[in-house]
Image (cartoon, rainbow, N blue to C red):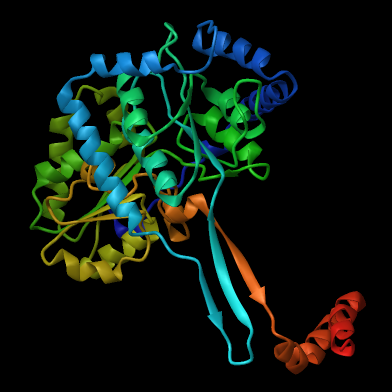
Length: 423
C-alpha cells in the first residue's frame, strides 16, 4: 500500500455515481418504456438483461417455503438473531408526536406519520445479500410502514437466492417481485399492472439502479445514491498489523473502486500493515478485485501525532471508521464525520455489517459530513400542527399582517385582518 504524509491527503471522492451519458440515456429510455407499457416492457427488459422469461414476477408462498429447505437451520437462527438485534436498535430511534400549549392558549406540535409504502431494492448478480434485506426492511417495519415491497433480479432459472427469500420472510415482507435493474426502480416509482407504486425506494444497486433512483427522485423519495464502500482505520502502536490489514481488505474485496485507508502516527505500524496487506492479498479468494481497489484507492497516511490523525479522518469523512488505539473512547468526542464508528479491537467492521444492530446503509463519498445512516426517521414524515387561539391572534395579528405586506402579499395580510374585524 502507498505510505503517504498527511499533506499528501487524497480525496476519497469518486465520480462513479455520475455515470456516463450513454448509461443515463439507457436508464431514461427504460423508465419511459415502463411508464408507457408497464408489465409488457418489464418482461422484455427481464428477458434482455436477466436472460429469463417469467410467467409471473411475483414470488409465491411455495417458493418461499422451498427456500427454507435449501438453507440450514443454523443460518435461519443467525438471521433471526440478527433481525432481533437490528429491530432492538432501531426501536430506540422512535420518537412520538408531541404538542405544547402556550399561556395564550395556542397549541403547537408535530405529528409523526409513517410512510404508506416503501420499495426495497436488493442486489442480485454473483452474490446474495440477505443483510441488505434486513437493514432496509426492519427500520421501515419499526417506523410503522404498512406496505413494503421487495424487488431483486432473478437468476437465469427465474429464481431468487434462498438466503434472500428466508431473510425477507423473517423480516415480514409480503410482496416480493423477481425484477431488477433500472426497470425495477421505474416499476416501483410509477407502477405496472403487477406492481403498485410506492412512496420511497431504498437499497443499493449497480450504476443503472443508482441512476434510475436519481431520475425518479421527486416523484418518489429515495434513501441515497451510494458509492463504492469505504473504510478508514485510525490506529496507533497498540493495534495488531494483521488485524488492521484484514479490516482494510474487508472493504477492498467489495469493489475495484472501494477505498481502504489507514491513518496512523506510527511509521512502524504503517510499514507492518503495508506488508501484511500484500501477504493476505496473495491468498484472498477475491484478490483480483481487492488488489485493484488497494492499488487505486488504498493508502496509509502517517501523521505527526494522534490529534492530526483524528483531523485527517474528519477530512476524509469515511463511510466506516475503526478506532483501534489506546483509550479509543477518549477520541470519540473529537470525531465529527463518519457514517459508522467502530471503537476498539473487537469492533471489526463486519460486526456492524451483519449482526450488531446499527444500520449498515451508510453515507459514502465524503457525504458523512452532512448525512446519516439509514434509520427510522427515513421511513416517517413530520407534519406541523398549529392551533392558534383567539387571544394569540389578537395579540399578534397586526404583526403578522405587517410581515405579509413587507413581502408584498396583501391577501395574506387581509386573511388575518378579516378575523380581527369579525366578532
